[in-house]
Image 1: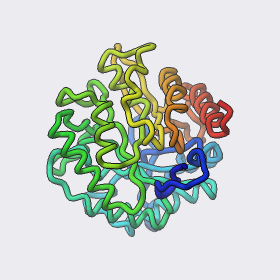
Image 2: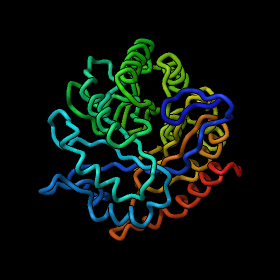
Image 3: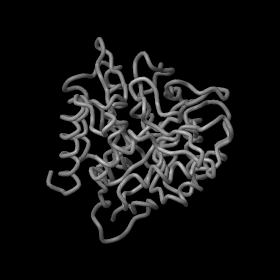
Length: 332
């Protein structure tokens, strides 16, 4: 038996899910990005919006590297999102990539980790309308607190690691999955020291398994997020794989890798495109332990105006691409 790539249902006579392979996820802010990511994102135009020339150059140079692509939702304004206000721009994002690529969507509006009351129906309706237009295979969002009382946070906080926090988050996730017309992948939250803080004392790996099992959802494991939690607990070096099996690995459909860095002994999830060796090592450890995995996603590449990846990122990008290719082809 295997799980259908789109619906999550099981089909008889098969031994495992179809492997998509290597994927791309890009954060696409409006206004063309800022600081080190200047020129990466969406820009306003008279005819509905477009991607920046820098993004188009990257798509032309590296689009063929990937089997599927996604971008993270960024609000265009403070108004309730309407698909009609975004599709012209989103059309151009996917048109810049090779035809036939699988498509997915990273939401940031479900706010599934919050203990506050939160109406997810507008975000779900918006997502369902986009999914019908673009054929998204799944939608993913970190299990985090993305905003409080309507105010967005600079970095999503993990949910309270308490029994009441787990009960509320599980209910939030189940509600979100029910509202959606496509599979929901819940992403293990980040624990970047100095970028977020943790409330409660439950083990995050066991917490995440209980939530996924009780809500009955697929999960995404961000390798940097896993390492950030291990670093927080002092589990580095060969100990970075300690307790990994406590996670719902059989529910994992996607791995994420974004640029990370160790700064003065603390783990930083910087999204600067440069992968740590430890991220590749943990990915290699996880691949045979996630039997229903669909793909491995490189998140937020950093690239020049001509679309070439920044020099520091190229070595481990190449290593990751080769590792995922071998996994997809069944040669590892």
